[in-house]
Length: 316
Image (cartoon, rainbow, N blue to C red; front, side, top):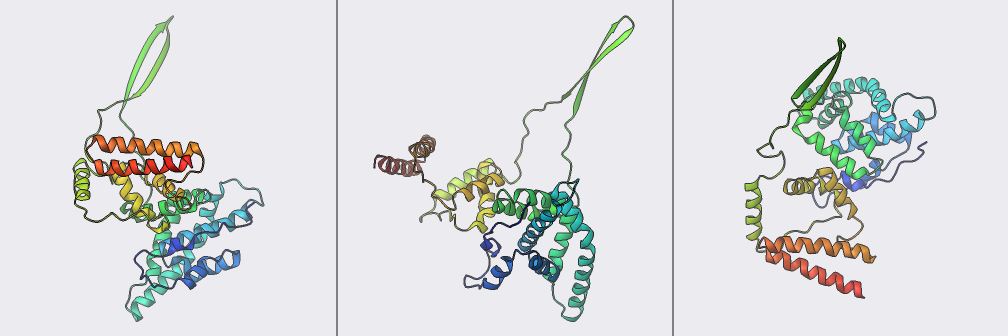
């Protein structure tokens, strides 16, 4: 049984484009409410519909309270599925109220009402794009930040606008049929084998093309000042950063976000045990050698310096 909700880093809900002197005291206070009564109040007052991030936070909080009650009695569905079905049955009235308010605001104030926009996003989440919400609710207990950023990325994707989840295309199938007759009886065997094609050509979505990679290194060579360092203390930027690293490496954004989160509380080169230091030194050595062979001696030189530093610390 779940009787508590883990503490969440409320800075995740601070917009990146907000003024530097913005006051988040009230926002952080309300986003920090976790009791059942307060969460339901924020839900019905429309607080969770002020932006997409808060909408996900609302689902996370409401799901935990729902789950605590759900497990107290006999149940047949997974808790996340049951929560989505339960929320869907009550959502129609909430959405109806939002549409009325949106209509009145449009007539009397003639302005955009952002709550209506997020309410429509929420309607899509609980009715058509339920896999996004389901995955978020399941994964958030393991790593809230990674699950949150991945869900935000999927909601911002243009594919979110289309209803439903497209099914993966089935590869062409070649059927091989062998027929052996024995004493007027048929022994039949059907082997279903996918038709293999040669490697696909073209650019992988969201990954830099070969030409873009060449442009990337050319632009790096023109830098006269040091590049900005990755700031591991600002998780709100991890999504965009993971997108860039995915474009460069081809590795999944979710795995990159997990890696970034690993270094929020420890240094990139930290390692108190000799084995950890040895692994870091081995990784740096491979990095240095790869860049050195490719002609990027300045990067290899920096890696060599870091290796010397780690070796010195190891001896101490």
